Length: 313
Ligand SMILES: Nc1ncnc2c1ncn2[C@@H]1O[C@H](COP(=O)(O)OP(=O)(O)OP(=O)(O)O)[C@@H](O)[C@H]1O
Image (cartoon, rainbow, N blue to C red; front, top):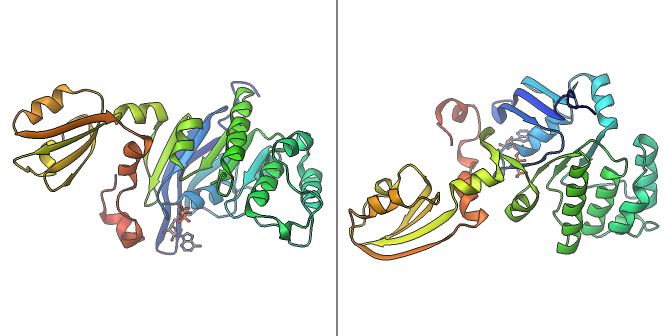
């Protein structure tokens, strides 16, 4: 590849409705070569819909998606892109009557298997056993070997570490980082914020089908790097403690929890108006910073009406 090559993943206004139900609305992103990109969002946000659109498994209602420069709605172009693509689905299923070796032989014939032996050493599975008898962790490891053994330019993964023990997870993160050094691109959905912090360069957060944040993990953490818990005698409304620099404020009785950037002047100015009974300051965890993107569940307002009325974010 050269620097003039297209972004491995590009979407423009990508939209999918299932009848009246909004799956994904107006997604426009570009994932760059060598990036490890995390795709986050609560259940039902549209992550799997986006991944299935990217893989050409669903037809978009509107908009465009290109993988490695190829239009995924064009059969021939999609086939070309898939030669350089690895895919790791969320529910790994194989035909039951085959062994692990059969599965790898099959994918090897389709796309190549130059890294098969090396990956099997790192993610060992009982190759001669029927996959029906595999534990969920072994199924996932077999799927990792199958997705990466042709050394693809781009790998798309739906919750890749679910079911893996911590040691295997670490090996998996190391694999992504090694690939990155050689220019390999990784795109994955996740609910595990610690892994996002560890491996992702940038994240896109979707909610109710819409992209609500797209930034580097470092920037997002810097904007909400501190948690302040303060108890106030006057019990003002939450809005009284929302000022530029606060990412999130919540209240329980007389105690307020603020997630904010590490700039304390505005906080001190604001607290000056009240009687402070107690105050603690600590570094924010990634959960503190990301949780406000998730908020309440999305179940109550799926669908077209929600698309027209709710302000989002
Ligand atoms: N085949 C389908 N028919 C109708 N609605 C669907 C279909 N698939 C998904 N949806 C709806 O589209 C929206 C997005 O779902 P999607 O599965 O893409 O979310 P997700 O972010 O992958 O969720 P999870 O984290 O739970 O896997 C949800 O409202 C869901 O109910």
